[in-house]
Image (cartoon, rainbow, N blue to C red; front, side):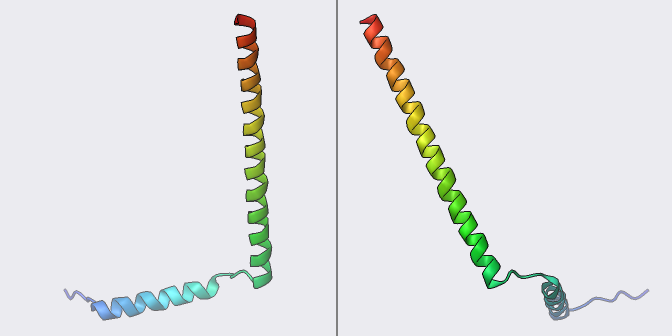
Length: 75
């Protein structure tokens, strides 16, 4: 019974070839798509950030008003 072993160099070169073949199958985004997606991400981040900030301010004002009301009622 013969066991066939490949050297480390053969394994590495085989791996590199497989990686290169897989990378050829990848659909890379075009520059225009990349710019569009970047704008969408930045816009969404700003929108949600501002929304969270405004919600926080609103809740803070409501709770502050409730606190002042309670102080006014209790004395």
